[in-house]
Figure 1 (cartoon, rainbow, N blue to C red):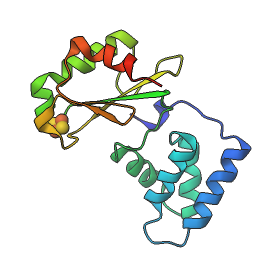
Figure 2: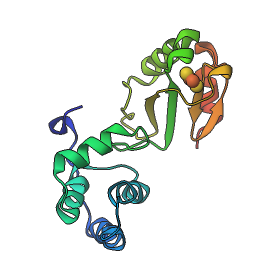
Figure 3: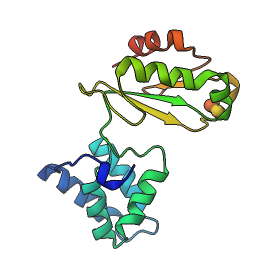
Figure 4: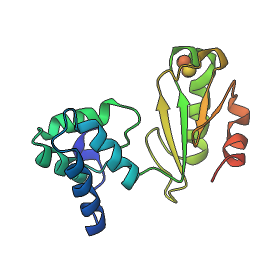
Length: 164
Ligand code: FES
């Protein structure tokens, strides 16, 4: 995804204060970027470009480097997540065992693509690389709870039974 494709987001005064505080307590530490991005995501639920720009400026790091880190790690999200975050593993083992069909089923049911959130902000879909549980794949994670040997037929029921 290109920076220009990301939705515009206006940081509230409270969010700006929070970001300043996070940057302030990490500023002179080595390797501050990842902890800063991590804490900001915890506060805001995602990493809007506007927050990344602020981090780049304050930590004196080029914007493209901040964006590079934010997009490299799958635990960072550049778009707002829904109340329920659904992650489908499409690492090699899960893919071979049918993970792709599970992802497609969710995409069809919710009318969203990976990394998108439904219009009512209830569900987000993410695709993960190997989650380290290949033996019990295909694996789906619903709000941090892991489900093993999931089939496309049962995945929607699993989501509804475990949603917030
Ligand atoms: S490929 Fe899915 S857990 Fe390893």
